Length: 297
Image 1 (cartoon, rainbow, N blue to C red):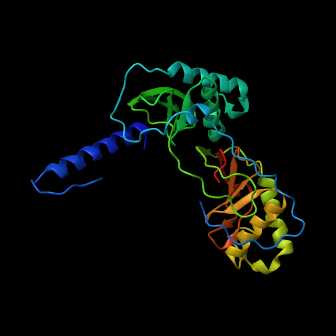
Image 2 (image 1 turned 135 degrees about the vertical axis):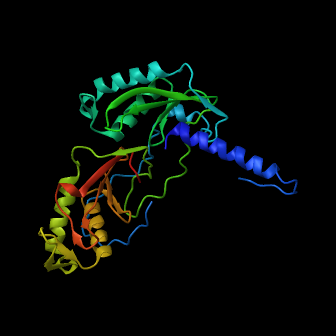
Image 3 (image 1 turned 180 degrees about the horizontal axis):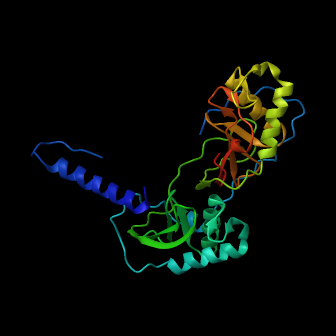
């Protein structure tokens, strides 16, 4: 749901609560990360880099109070920051051409983080709610922009302005880093699938290594029809072994209940689905599911 639509629904709900509470003449009032799995011991693990605080993505946002998720009004008017957003898109094309192929966005997370950082250099706070980009330099109002089409193409569209500002978005405190990870906890603002995963070879190699070093985890006589993927006897142990193996290669990793999240820095995480139907291992290009910027944990 779009930023303006969500704001409008919240405002409508607030009005509805007041209206219901005032009817009938009665007294009274009305008001309206995943668990860490235990890791098997890994001998001679490669040490993870020393802990460093996660950098502030936007100093301009850090200087402002959290945005108001229930603005008084949102309307279409002459935008204040449209030229800044258009210039940020052009600047990002020049600085990171690998994010694009023509008008196509190849790296959605990198695209939004790049725009946030460039607008921060202009002294503007930009934040992304999963669908639209809010931009401001004051608590009084924020412009809202749609900068990506449904086909992941660049768009330069002003949606409207909200009073008071919707951004920066309050995301709360990140969950603590999983056991064995020395990097500071982090939260993503945008995710998307890139042409390929940069950590894919290590994750795929880890599955191959487990097949050899931990044969007790698998039933090699029961394979998925149409592939050579053997059945996993104990999924929890399998995922824990994968996390431990990746940690031994210098990664921070954890299993979120569906996918293994992997990072080397807090710039981004990659997400891998290493089981098929919660029964067999999964290998090949399909194990890479997407990337989040900044890191999702």
